[in-house]
Length: 421
Image 1 (cartoon, rainbow, N blue to C red):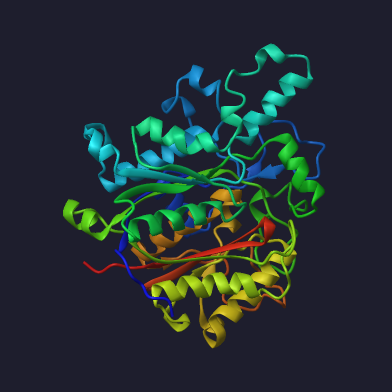
Image 2: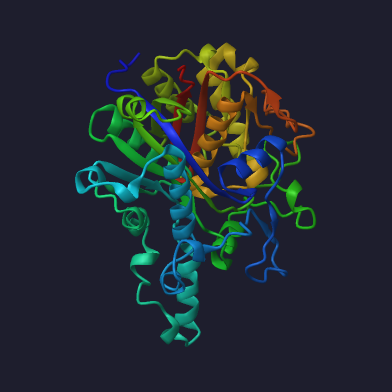
């Protein structure tokens, strides 16, 4: 096993802007209760489309975070990220307004996103091709490229440390958190704000995923039933948006401040099976190896993991291969390992999904309660593990794993552990 050298890394703040709840505690209240945030799309007319539903955020006021003029030059991912990061900072007790320059230089930002402000970009193209070019924003280039998303958080809160973006498909936020963890562990950072955000609910993006034939089309009239990970009658994933952010800091920093500690990130593993642009290889070897690498860094044995947060997209291929990968990674322990997928309640927020999974896992550890996988009346024959169907479960969680799988054959996993006072 790899040696676990370096500093311990604690999570001291959590923020969430989710389809099933705005704010950390609302997100968690609905997640543990199995309340879905999947609904009919309201932002544009998709009444003639095969897919008419999404994990769309409602009741969020972006003007609380940006002015109307600022919003005209960016998309929803920006205020989502600022809001979730701000909640995490407040939760951690980080008084950023009173920091001196040296302190601001010690805070770094790591953000994962699959597509960033896609809805903003699509809107700019619609102006251009409809002859309304004068409506295009002067920020069409910077706000349509991913790199500025991390900068938006840095600028909002004045942080002068690293400000880096990760865009690796659905593992984007897992990788961002993993790199933030490594930076603190190896002494390159003291405090990081990290997480994931995506805002892909837009006509062309929806159409693109429809062309891949991997989206649910059977539940337009009953949106909350559409996302069905591991179910025998699953018919694809549900597109979603949202932001989930964290404050990570060294043990020394957290203890010195007397911060509330949600848990310790102790391991991160990532692999690429180099197989296909969008498909997973059936054998599941590389997703399994990512989980094994995370456990090796944590110096945790498979039988010591109490809970697994699945990627669990509800596509036929992903759920089947992920189940195989878990069996490979955990061996005999897989059969008794409980786990669930928050995507059953929020849909699939693309590059932000790993951050959503980590938030659910940390709050599950805090409250000794594992959330359910809803809409799982009958599991598929090839999906034969414990996915905590339909009802959450009271249980102690001392060690947990978060697993993610992405387009481009990428895989990433985190191990998180409870911290005793």
